[in-house]
Length: 252
Ligand SMILES: NC(=O)c1ccc[n+]([C@@H]2O[C@H](COP(=O)([O-])OP(=O)(O)OC[C@H]3O[C@@H](n4cnc5c(N)ncnc54)[C@H](OP(=O)(O)O)[C@@H]3O)[C@@H](O)[C@H]2O)c1
Image (cartoon, rainbow, N blue to C red; front, side, top):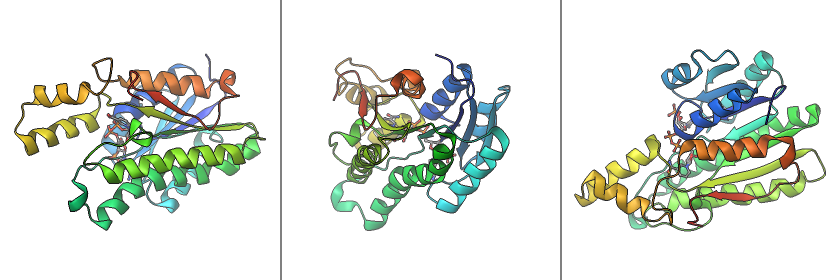
């Protein structure tokens, strides 16, 4: 699969899943812009990659996302692949979850997707092609205890995906969500740290407990999520829209 002529924008592209997606898209010929709040991981990811640039920005702020998309489009042409990957997961029992906690989960995991897709859609319509891709989660398809805000936000992303796909079905723009199970990234490390701190279990035990939810008994590799993005980005996936694709070893 070759993606020459495409410009892909990946939010949260400096770490974990987003970094693997950005690298895979660049390796397949796309020009790539990565964004996130911290400069260091963006700079490090883009280093030595001729066709990859970075711009800092916060996906929870619509104005910042618009600025990032405008600058990226000036530098590398209209965005034709938009991967809304930035996200965060806070773990708390429901009884201790405040309205502010819920708002924070919705801000990054739902509004972050909304803000990116709003900002890139006019350019895609003009370019006459586009791929809107959200990195949701198995938490968009099933519940998990102690992460109700995160699960609610990821379910909302799947709903947004299905609805927008129908609105755009007569255009050459597809809209899909990818739903990974627990994947080997900094976010997973935080989840393990959290279990260790709250239960006194060892890191090994905590990791084993999380991996046991995956029927394959392992964590998903970020590169496996990136492969699904590559497929959706290609011309051959033109008939695939409104889907929530599970990459989870059969968990969902
Ligand atoms: N790891 C898993 O087990 C797993 C499973 C299913 C789904 N996912 C999803 O995969 C996506 C990537 O997560 P990951 O596992 O790769 O974790 P990660 O390494 O922690 O990545 C999260 C990325 O999002 C960026 N980010 C967070 N808040 C942001 C904001 N307000 N504005 C802009 N960027 C922001 C972070 O960069 P800055 O901090 O520099 O902003 C970081 O690069 C998330 O949507 C997550 O929900 C992960």
